[in-house]
Amino acid sequence: MAEQDDDKSEEPTQHRRDEARKQGQITKSQDLISAGMLVIALGVIMFFSQSLFNYFGDFTRDKLSHAPPLQVSFQWVMNENGSALYRLAMVMVPILLLLMVAGVALNMMQTGVLFLPEKLTFDFQRVNPLSGFKRLFALANFVRFGFGILKVLIVSTVAAISIYFDMPTILGLAELSPGEIASFLLMTAFWTSMKIGAVLLILALADYAFQWWKHEQDLKMTKQEVREEMKSLQGDPQLIARRRQVARQLAMSRMGSDVPQADFVVTNPTELAIALKYDPYKMAAPVVLAKGAGLVAQRIRRIALENDVPIVERKELARALYRDAEVNQAIPAEQYAAVAEVLKYVYELKGKTLPTLDDLKEHDQRKAA
Image (tube, rainbow, N blue to C red; front, side):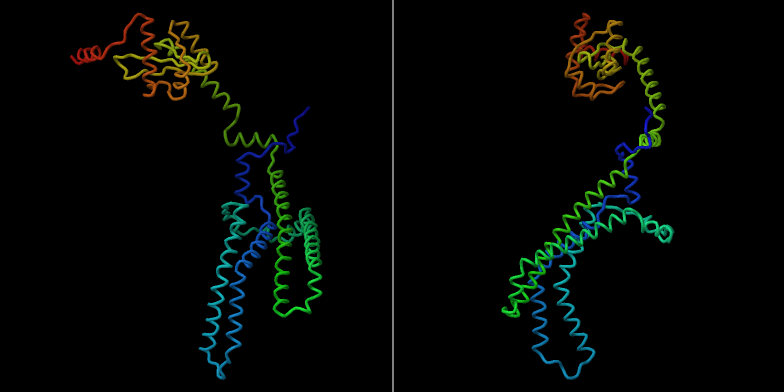
């Protein structure tokens, strides 16, 4: 059966996501921001309600308790307006700052830090009447319009139900004092608005979930797109495979000449193999001639057996050397003691003894002479 490359069946790669983000294609629900701002604004106003009531009460009391001057000067008007604005700012600035922070936070929660300077450039397609006419009758707009009508119906139902349960009190407002009527109306308006905000927030979360699903579907890739992306980012996979094959062949050819020169091979016992060489008169520490895992380790063992190179099984040491040591470099200092123990064992197998410190000093003196 032929492969259907036209079907977007592959999950988007990280590169695809990054490129889409650079173009401004992100998951974002404006309804979530609006609903969140409504709920937060109501909460902030409720928190600062006492300050607002005190301000307007004091302001009304001050203006009604003093008779205005018979002659009003420009300076008097400026002083009165300045004083009123200052007192209003002391109450409103904290509220406005909190709402500004909330608005920024709600956007950042959806988009993160996103800077798109190219969006500020002029694009004729944005003002093209033909393109705008096509967008007007797009399927997404009809879906959004239907969702808007649904929201209006739901909000109206919530408001009607909320007021219905307060109907006995509303019918008895004539028996209450003006202060009690005002307090009831304010609290009814507040809690009705809060219920509406909560319902809108639930609908907004559902809208965000839909936007996320749609965004994921739009980012999906065909198998051909995945191959083209890999080719553009990493090069032709066939060339990469060829390079790796050549590198393996070169490594294998070097093993054929390096491993026979080793003094011993440390194994794990068949999974890992590290060939080591140590000349106490020339080297400060043993040097790794070759190392490998799996098939490479088996080849190192086979070459060592063919050339009578001792093979010593030390599981922990083999893992440590394979992890930390590099080919053609001395072993790490942390492995000196363990390797020295193996080296002593190999020398004993060969009927040799490791040179002492005095032997090394005598050799250096002869060499210097």
